[in-house]
Image (cartoon, rainbow, N blue to C red; front, side, top):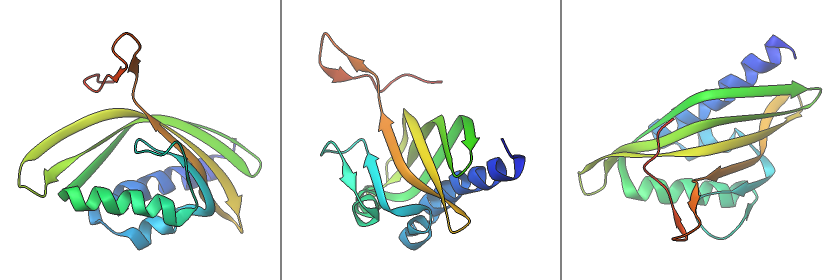
Length: 143
């Protein structure tokens, strides 16, 4: 694995954090491949294309007056023109109502593809553990 490639990918993940904190959809757009497939927390089962991904982030911005995002334990594997990583992420901040929320931790997986020299997110997946007995997501766990 090239340390240069890993550093570039880590900067992309940092770009997600920066774009969310700034509530900047155009900055976020530059991080994703045009044909990104996202298995996000929100229905439906998949969101296809950068516009669909940005609509998800735009919904987040409607709920939050101030957004914060934290990433923990990012592990990357890089090979050639593809890479993948997994981490824990937490979206938190101040809601539009003015109430502060500490958010919840989710599991995140990113798949990157090098396109014209840039590492772009070609796929991401966000999930919470499921309590099978109740059929409900478990949202109070911490890494």
